[in-house]
Length: 309
Image (cartoon, rainbow, N blue to C red; front, side, top):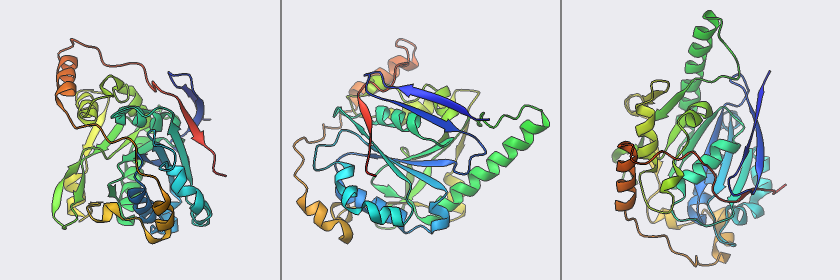
């Protein structure tokens, strides 16, 4: 059997039904958070298209557009090239937030984990991409963990294909544009949806101010005895596997196939807010000291799925 769950956003905008099983053919959704940067998005799409089809078919691809203005939305770039993506069998879905909220990383991540149709979600940023070797490594790592999970739980007569291991992989190493090894990327992680929601998802109380989204989430994960948190840093280094950070000037240049679309795009009329960390640092401290509860309301905005069939 399979389990169906429906999630409705707090702002009353939309609902989505998802069905997942540990034994489902596709196990990972690659979820990309996007905000009006066509150059970076074109490079991310190009990296997916370079994967061998055998690896690409193992993933669902999901773009969460975090309130981009018309003309700079993800769909504005993808629409003219949608047939190319179909021919390459990129199983892509796009959701848009209906409000442009400042620093809404946690809300966008929560939406990704609410609508993904696979039991595991890999979240990433638009300024880093992974090559096919890293993608293949993640598939193998996940398969090894699931085989062990099924073996142990079957022996204990407790196996249920709709119950997924509460596990999170963090600390994906990345290379800077100059080729130097850099610290693991905090925003990239692979988690079972069950683990993500067992932790209460990302705390949306800190939306509106910069920082602490990943740190707060992993702080809770590291202290929850139900959750297995595994670092990939040493293992990836041993295999010489890295994410690649997209640096300037490449992050300002669209790929050639998307150049015409990028050139027609308008200038953004809203600049990003300054990165002032003090507010969320203070709020995180109060939550750690139990002076403020962790949030338990999610998707505090309108959202909808984009139809580009």
